[in-house]
Image (cartoon, rainbow, N blue to C red):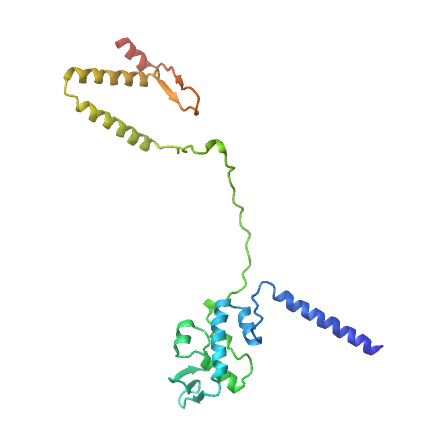
Length: 245
């Protein structure tokens, strides 16, 4: 009976550990072809970084027997690597090598991995400390943001130009542009009588516009007849101008 209870307790504990392990891996990258060393690298980096480290890791295992490591006599943290086309130097306190890969990528190179593998050092064969922090992906707490608002699209406004509200300066500049075009046309008239008649016509239109007695055409829908509205407005200046006429 006691043996059965121990077996059940051990099974429950194993199932609980497996559940915690699977729960901790939620949201993390996995690769079925990686061993434990590479799985740990992929756990806190990206697939791109893990792929680069995997190439160095495989190359280090292949060249493990060809490399020889000699510790420097003056500085005990410096090791010289021989056995390849070139000789390289790396340190065992930060695991930085002077090879092109380590200098450019700021990742553990195959020289360091081969040394740790051959020395049977305690801890991981791929030193995590030599992985630059720019390649790591720490978990960040998501912050709540305000939801954006939207305006419902209406078919009535389809194909119609939306006019923005103009400032007084913009309105003055636009009106000045139109009046300059009119003045340019008037200056091209050669006959004096025709010029006077055109000028009187424009002055009359200006009086009507100032007195709010002119008719302004309103925008119309396609297929509808044109509509006009007239606004009557009397003030002291307008009455005096009417008397003058």
